[in-house]
Length: 438
Ligand SMILES: Nc1nc2c(ncn2[C@@H]2O[C@H](COP(=O)(O)OP(=O)(O)OP(=O)(O)O)[C@@H](O)[C@H]2O)c(=O)[nH]1
Ligand SMILES: [Mg+2]
Image 1 (tube, rainbow, N blue to C red):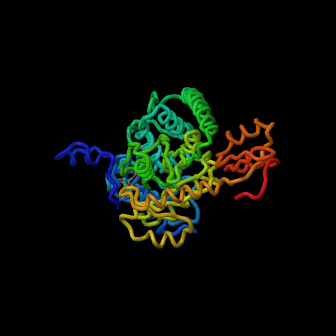
Image 2: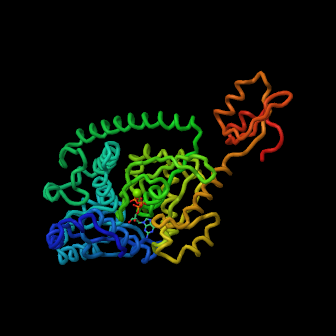
Image 3: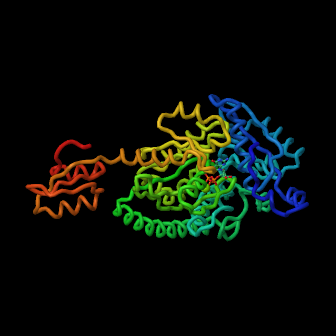
């Protein structure tokens, strides 16, 4: 296990450990290896699930793994293995079994009956952590919406006896939620209300973003796997005092700060929620408006923790989420972080052309990152030369509005302007261009 600290691990002070332990839920994990997945992939998935469970505030006491061609439609594991899981759960005196893959409502129902205890999946654990970490009004609404959309199809499957065990991971009541056994109609009404609230928050933010767009300042979004060091980097670059914690999903809201690059160009830099393997689609959907800042950015700084066992696996998981939120086409600057505690940086840099290596904690490599950001942003817009006739003040004004004017000189037949323009502005101002883009 990593040096990850648990949410409750430090509560209680001296002697509190025993009491905290006693109150933490006991969990058995279950995973299935479905070829072409290898057993070590399943184990790595369960290692990460264990970290998620710990972050949610519970203890993993055992795990069960099975190799199958396909999940059993009724019980996910095969019947025999499910019976073995029941014995393991009884022997370990566990409250809840957590599956690494999303269970269908029917599978969850059947498993709970068979196991005689709560069965939940990775999605429920991640939703639980998000619910615990949400602090802004928008964050809380987004998480509650995701939780309700997850629970709605599962309502019917909850037997009376089991639902009374509620109050643990996955069955804890979400922020602002009325009752666990609230009827379907009330949940649907609540979903609509949350959707409305979130729409108006998003509309407000859209207006802000349009204003930012007009200001022509380029926007950079910091993205990456959860706990990669995104917030540490924002703090290192801008002194913004964003919460940094050795905890998964410490950041749920977006924070934007202004930053001057070495050439003096200002950029807007945004830190936002981290990603994870199998990030629940309900969350991606609910956080769509927060994540719009990523899809809308001019450049992504993709922070990768170089000190984890499989940095490239985490990069793939991040890119899968980027794809899901429509940000796959945004240019990406890969930034290997935590080089103060790993020797892997050199090997990774060799394999990823154009990447940089830093320690967001010590500041090592930050200058190189800033230079690379400036280079990449400059490459995104071309320098062009324009000749604008004297009677076309409107065109001159639009060059100033849409681009960055580098120099202006009065010529015989008009104003000669050198300006940095993006593709769209270049195309619009095409008829005034002279010479080649520089
Ligand atoms: N050794 C070392 N630790 C780092 C570095 N950067 C960040 N950390 C640590 O990694 C942990 C996570 O850092 P955060 O900045 O909160 O990571 P994040 O990517 O914002 O994480 P989430 O918001 O939870 O997704 C903290 O304990 C940081 O102190 C680094 O360069 N070196
Ligand atoms: Mg963060």
